[in-house]
Length: 185
Image (cartoon, rainbow, N blue to C red; front, side, top):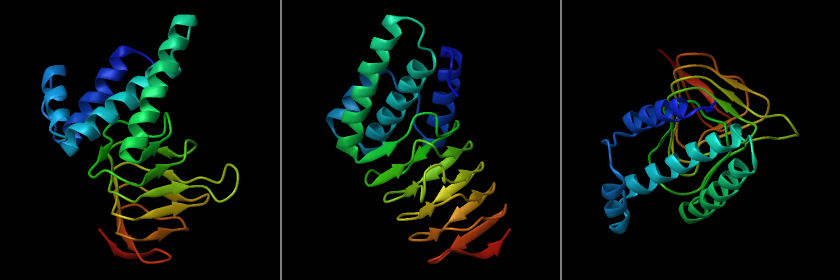
């Protein structure tokens, strides 16, 4: 959870290294946006997400609430443009979005560090407060989905177009509809 500017810098450093983005200055990011580089657009979304989390978690006075509302508005606009909807304070450091489009993560989901996902990923709930808990070093392939009150362990790969509706142990690969363990590392 991002509460201070030091936390924000740590999260952005981890996200940047996970995405493979160099230390971009504002001018380089702006120039990259002009040419619609997918990686630059994704990184700008992650930066906006992290800043909105900071403003949300550190609301002290009226000025910080205004910063939160402005940042939240910008995040929603950029998210609508890129078709990405990730709730605040869901993911730990090291978030990597590899492609734009069709990504939805419920705001109640808790995800550990070094989480990677592709396009078409949906992580949601079946009933109120029945959301997945996802561990560290997890990768969701294109079109993968997870629903219900389940736990996905650490070091897990969810294969493309899989639907996870049951608990997944650590160190494995799951695939299928519904997803079953196909390989244990």
